[in-house]
Length: 330
Ligand code: 13P
Ligand code: SF4
Image (cartoon, rainbow, N blue to C red; front, side, top):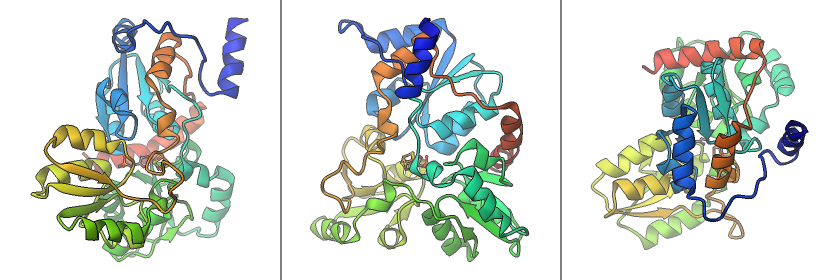
């Protein structure tokens, strides 16, 4: 009966709803449960600071996939979004992978349903497929290799110059890689709902008002935004850049969670979130990443649910392009 109730809740809400004693010290409880269950917590830079601070490893998508490949714990708690937890499961099919909220999706992953992508791919039978890691496991099964924003150029460069390539699902990252490699990869029409909202006009205005600030951007941003940037890179690359740059002020065009690490690494520097074209939303926050919370993390560890599972054949097929990426990125 209890199991049925939990399953129903997971279908409807994506997480188990439970009243938590307000006196409970959540951080301490999470650490206790983690030890008791031999679990490891992997968090992405885009989740809330308190969820980054409790992690055994915090990083960008590449760092997290590499960390997942080294895990020897029994349970991986992925504090991020669903495609990241799927990747961890594909790399660790015998381990239990849990995600605090099953509905933590991604606009890029959702932009490329497997059936539509299969039809698209069929139009280019002589093309190899490079899939940005922000995609479903089903899409990865149709791919020759996976990449992240940190290694996309390296992965593309690993193909002969005359190889015909499809890049999916992020058209902005694909466009950017085309521009720096001189390729003309065929692009799937997907975008990140956070990175496509930045306003060029407002960024220029902010740069004018802060002439001492450097503007830095994630390659998921649109081309007009990237053209303004002093430095373009994955979240880890941006974090490294602010530490090595002599500038004291930065305008940052990526999800707001990274500001937590930037401020920790450089407490004497100022970080300004880049403005978006919609003043009515908290547009620098990824609504999916922000579905994670300390409460949901605690409940998820306690019940070891929601669990991310995949059919065996999907795991086997999707593992090949992921392993290729990990090999090249060593
Ligand atoms: P990285 O983790 O590669 O910087 O990508 C950012 C992102 O959008 C993850 O969802
Ligand atoms: Fe997806 Fe964008 Fe959110 Fe990353 S920030 S999980 S790419 S919607």
